[in-house]
Image 1 (cartoon, rainbow, N blue to C red):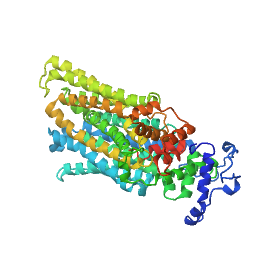
Image 2: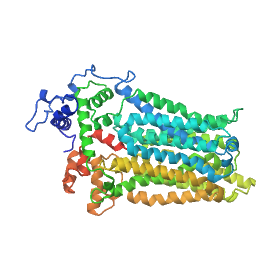
Image 3: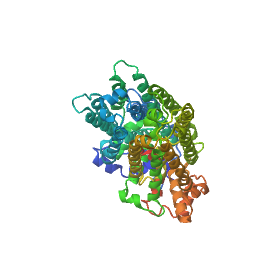
Image 4: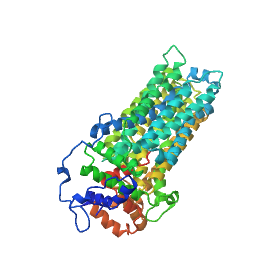
Length: 599
């Protein structure tokens, strides 16, 4: 019934053959697929009685990158992609141990004992990230995945150099802020591009696992930043206290920008730009097969089909439509996940944990840095648990249990800080002893967050939004993330300075408010194909039931079942509707499409 049922691969090749002559004329005589050498049926489709796997695999037409192809090339791409997110996590955590460093405060007096300026200094990075994401939204398709990653890496390096080169007598604070903003722009470019690049180059049979691995890499980057912050405090050269942790980012940036030069461009992007021969060559390299191998040709046809389908009628206005497609609701559900991740308090802990330990718990700076580094290590370790849970317990369970855990952690933190007073003015032994419970609360929060809320908001928008609006809807969700990331980073030091333990009470209440929204409005997408998710929203709309109930009632469907429900809900009448677009994507192509625009 679906695109990949029965003769799907070969049908895809024939559909491409149908316009191959036009491609030849416009692209210097590029050869059409070898339909003339294949037996055909009455319907001009290739006889699929021949076993594709039985075709000989020759590699004389296969290009290698750094001498790599097939699985080894895919691993190399994944290493570079995860390095980009390692850099993302490092830059998130590096300012946590610097912003209250006496040496840093003396060098930049505006930051000393001024929570507002500290918030701006840390948060201006998020504004840069937002600008970088908008840049990719506008210019990303023109620039390409590979060039965008290279550009993002060099922009980050430029920003780092500007920061560490700040010298007294030349407006050093302004220079530092400009450099931090530029670094953010580079990171925004990277986080908006790398997931798409990795997905379009990988055989992603499990889209949930792919994003969870990237999420864990963010946590490992943060852990590295915390330990480098701690180690730099022992240098006799006081300038090293803050210059070295910031400068260390250049290591990751150079690796990303230099190695990416030797890796292939995304085959999907090449084919979307009508660079068919190059796209076919990259596909062959990724498969580790000859360019004429049936698997390579079938994959090429699948991608071309999905590109044609996704390009129809995808405008910003289409985001604000209802009906069976429910574009607006689906965009809001996906964006709300990014919103909740930020306002739940994660970056209040990640960016400011040493500050919170010093100001809220009364710890010394050295102890605060050690505890923060250990906390980041736990964060990284527990972020890997999502790899094993995401496809076993589902998205809703992780969302709900993660929210409960975060809320409980914030309750423990504020409750144990109450004896110390709003401004931590009570320094009696009893109050200090009670405040130690706050350390446990912050540890519990970051552990729960790493295992649940860290990866989920990067995955869920890509699943709930249909392919017709996925690129723009995901861009909006990413912008939501960076915007509220900035807000939280900006207001957290002000809140801690003025309301003390009540800061954690506010975050506990906010987390509690997530529960009814998730419970009533977040349908389960575990194990569902893209067309099944379209049916879930159509079922909810037509039968006037919640989409959560629709997802529970709808059985797991094969292609035949999808076709049956499509007829029941009158989907597929319009060739441009979401259902038909999604059904034109194969299971492998579907997983790639689900990842497009994730940042």
